[in-house]
Length: 361
Image (cartoon, rainbow, N blue to C red):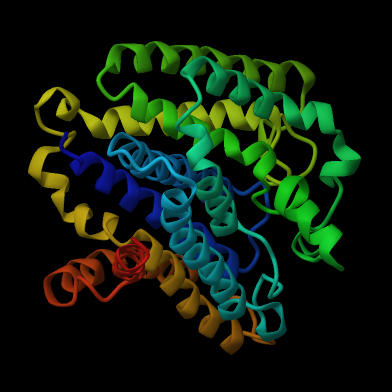
């Protein structure tokens, strides 16, 4: 099966992550939460992270499935597969936290769990996931969707500030941030990993995925009507809204999952049936970036860490300069990735993972 559309999806997901992180470090002066530009920036972030986790879950599940089908079923076989992935992802999370540390004007504490520790947990669970039938995984997805309602706002930290959510005092709080009330806790964010496993299993059934997308569209319209009827905002990063990112609400999971599936289906085009992905060769310029998304994810925090340190105590930029810096920093990774793949393709975190995986076989 050709995978051009997967690299393109990965590229778009990481570009959107770069955009929203840059906008958070360089917010323009005078912009409020209700500003249309702020809403657009938040929308990119709100949809990028679910897409990033879903397609990462797809990749982890694909790798684990191929390993199981090749006859590697013993505990030692799985340990040699998991160890380098978990070690690399956790190490990269610590590195990200250091690069954008709160002590130097950044947004993270050193030991803050994040999206990479979420993916490390997905790697740990992969040997179990590949043995679960689709019905069980769908049931687990429904559990994840229901979990914000079942756990309750007090435990999830509905009224917490950002700094409450990234701080932890001792192992018990660190585990709670990792599992249910951090920035990307396993419950409910494993929903997107499970969604990625379904995308992989249904790769030859685009019509089935389209029916699921239709259900997601109807559900999304319902959430919008609820917003209008109850006269509350449809979507906010945090606060009183139908869709909230911190913590992730049930409605947010459904709507963002719908958009992630829709984006995948559009970019896939006819590739699953032997044809061309959406856009044909016109979008092939994204593929080099899609091959090194982990490297770019970590590297862009190095740039943002320097910017955050330099801007401590400085006034915010005006709208146009802030917008130009944000878009420029987002798009520059496309030619950088192309040059990387042409000149030093093996010097990357992805290349390191391949070497570590070979050494543990």
